[in-house]
Amino acid sequence: MQPKEINNKDVILITHGDVDGMVCAAQILRREKSNMELVFSNAKFIHSKLYSVLQNNIPKRIYITDIPASIEVEQSLNILFSKGSEVFWIDHHPWPEGVYDRIVKLCTEVVYKKGLEYPAGALVGQWLKKEDPYYEQVGNICYAYEKGTDWERNWFRLLASYVGKSEREVLERLAYNQDFTQTDLDRIEQQKESEQISEDILFKQPETVTVKSGKEMAIYDTSQMKGVYLGQKVFQHHNVDFCLTRISEKKWWLASNPTSKHSMKALLGKHQLDNMTITIAGRENELLSIENVKNIDSIEPHKLIISWLCDRL
Image 1 (cartoon, helix red, strand yellow):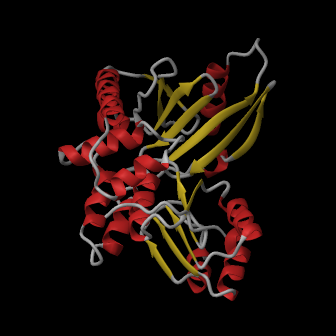
Image 2: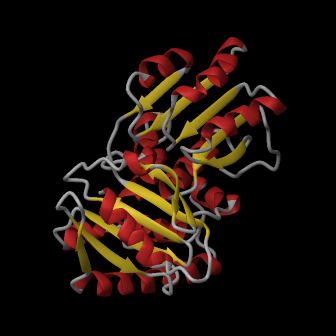
Image 3: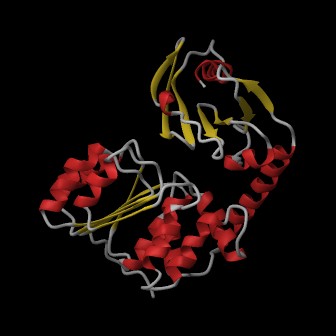
């Protein structure tokens, strides 16, 4: 099976730009034989993204994958429902109370199972495997951060190298089970090197602080180590409740230990820290992104954010 040249906006996929979301994209590209528009978004912008889609055209079919629903999208879904559009929503993130019951009435089908152990790509694979077992094979890539076949692990590595900057031609190679290019193989080798660096970091005891609630937070700085991702593996190596990782000069990730289920909802939004402004978004029970959007040179943002979090966790 080969992708067609045309890009048919009668079918649209809106998906997240991480590995899980890209796996979903490859699966839907295969199902639609590439005759679709591919759009990347996230929980913060799904409402405005849906709204902008409706300003251009009413698609006959729309998929939303690896992005949580919210009450704000109901109006857009009502329009799609009234126009007879098919809407498929597949996700595994926490949804606000009552949203599922409202959204499911406006969708052709909702595939929803909450939890990190049920990535959206795996849900799509289960949903479509009767059409073609390859969908399930692609879905297994979502589990391949630590284990899996060589094929699954290498595709995970390749997609991880494109997080936040996905390229459609890479996803189409996965969709149609094509061979890796030399560029792909080079990126996979770079990811393997980053994995080894991550393991070396995790093997060492991290700096920790005790936050206001008495819980422990590990602190890492990988901002000078391009491609290094620690993620939830921190909690497999160290008995801490939270993990703050500085991943670039102006961006941090704050993870919560999945076994503890600590809510970080109160941190979401925009905050003023002295003369620095930060925005926090993401999955309140799993992983938050902290971004420094305004700063003056005299402030050391890393120490300021640590201090601020210690008072609020």
